[in-house]
Image (cartoon, rainbow, N blue to C red; front, top):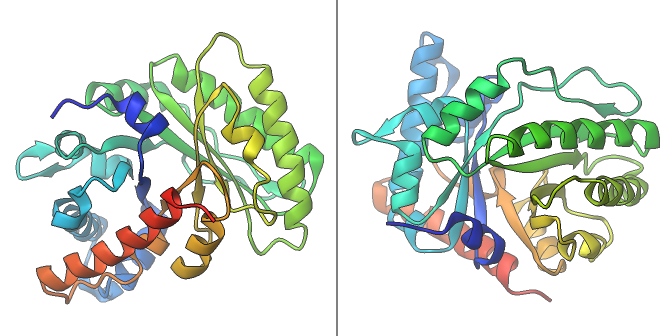
Amino acid sequence: MSIDMREKIANGAGFIAALDQSGGSTPKALKGYGIEEGAWSNEEEMFGLIHQMRSRIITSPSFAKGKILGAILFERTMDGEIDGQSVPAVLIEKGIVPFIKIDKGLEDEANGVQLMKPNPDLDVLLVKSKALGVFGTKERSVINLANRAGIAAVVKQQFEVGQQILSHGLVPMIEPEINIKSPERAEADQILLEEILKALDAMPGDDRVMLKLSLPEQAGLFDPLVDHPRVLRVVVLSGGFSRTEACAELAKNRGVIASFSRALLNDLRYQMTDAEFDASLGEAIDEIYAASTVKV
């Protein structure tokens, strides 16, 4: 199936599935899926189990019903196969645009934020990803407090890495996540909006980026980002909200779609029959799709 990935991401009705928990969060993801820590004896077996889980999601009938525009993969998932075919190729065949998580985790907090750790091998990963048919990347930083110097540093780093990604012909999904438990969440939202607008206006050339943000405390706050000519799409993470809460908040924000992980996968269990698994996944997909496409 040949799909115009850029057109699909820019204008498609649907949302992006985040299937990119990596190293440190893998045991937690498996536990949520109903597999306890004693079920594997080494890292390879652990990653084998998470690959089985992701393969089961991707091959579920409800995953390919046209409601999912894209899927964010962890590098090991991208490198893996499903029925002898590369995972990005399987997604593209289903009409789903593949993305790759490229950050290597977070630095310790300074100025109320956590920057991304250095990533000296990024160019190598980008070349490999592009060759596998991947469309874009995702890179996450975290903002805990409304510290302008800290937030400006996060945005600067994100856009610098974004330029590196654009130079490889991939689209960066810039993710400066605001901790929804922050006591200064509303102020942080406002500062982040201002800093992102400055960075977008200063971008050279005519490339476009994607933004992955926490749900804003004030609905509609990100309208200027949705409308900005340098933004391909604005997506939001569930960030600790339950699926019901996240969908209710998402539906209040015009032009914004979901990129949920936990809120999408939370009810899936290893022990389910394939029919139960698909029904549970389908229910989550329908709810998230509605909040991404029908605004209140």
